[in-house]
Image (cartoon, rainbow, N blue to C red; front, top):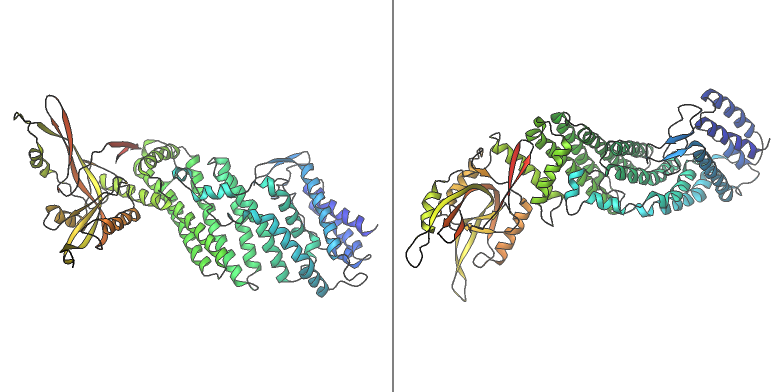
Length: 597
């Protein structure tokens, strides 16, 4: 029996074991027998390849090259890939493995077969063959197989349904840019088969060579696992979430293996891979929490889940610090840091959604999925075209605080006093030419949120030399709508002291009167301040320091005659322009939240 025949017999043993046709004891006995025969004769390189350690490998999925589960019994003819979700016959998978193994033997023969013919292939020769011939070829094949994944490799791993409400989502941008595996799977199959082949391993004699192989294997397989996981997660179904977790677990194992293998050889890569493993494990755990809530009509244990998500987000924060200190090139470090930061923010937003569910939805019997739909309606109403993940994070943090303050469970800066309104209404009554006056009544009382900033400015005088006197004031930015409206309240205005008192002594809002949810983020308020101090005559060059959101009372009065009526929006200070608004109530579980438009 020649070496080629023995090699085929050894390959066939792997196939028969994967198909369940022989047991492991028989496999080991036959493998030892034929390996001994192969090592006794023939061309040195052929003997080396044939006698290389044989490790029983699972059949690979023809669709994504992930390992297929072993058949439960000999009668089973097809198997479901738990990574990509495809169903394949065992025979098809076995034939595909045999085709790839045949191509690998041909590739090895072409590259290494003519070296050191007729001599003993010692360790030094094998190392030379690997580094001079095999590794460059493997690197080229790997780069070609994975080049289309370069833009998405480290982009966000995690998302959940509410993120889809944003005008743009970095997770979905990554998903759209991730190439369909069907178009690149043949390249990936070929590269992975060469990297994992026993013939290749026979030439990787040192730890450095083995680590280089593992790095190439990770480069190929992380694309497979990430493509599968993002696609499955985006379906937001129990089945999709389970498959996403399976892929992330496999990816974390890859990163951890790469970190261990390169620890002594490349500390920078080892630290980077360990950080990516930490990030991947954190995301997998967050997906597990998401699965509990999307799959459980009663939502699950909210307090424990919030804690679990905070731990996951904290792990992502730790991974960011480790990635930044790993010493990798910016083209690798920067996208990894940014993607991990988005994962951490998204996980915390999910935690705030669950916290809201606990505050106002969990006791109603409403499912978390239904609650997310109501939250989605509030996002649709509150967002603007430029709203991003930072805005969403800020929005949910503020809505949690808002509901807590309305329920008298937390404190916020609020001026809950409408005594001024009754006295202000008569000053706005108009009389007709013939002397008949309007009738007036207050129809609405509402607390409107404003960002309050302390303002230092110069009251400009003169024409040629603009001498000025420094004055103080408060700059109020409307936080209920994205209109960028700003008003200045000076120290002599009674509202000035009331705002300062509210910031220094926060209190609960209470259930009456109605209070409107803030929708403008601190970043957006800073932009409004910059625009105001750059373009508003008399305040150009002034300095503003953003303080807090303050709920300020507003009253709507109706003035009517026999022929017409009008409505006026009033504030305690005449410096705030009262703009007409509509109130939009949205029910979140057993709470009603109000928005202005």
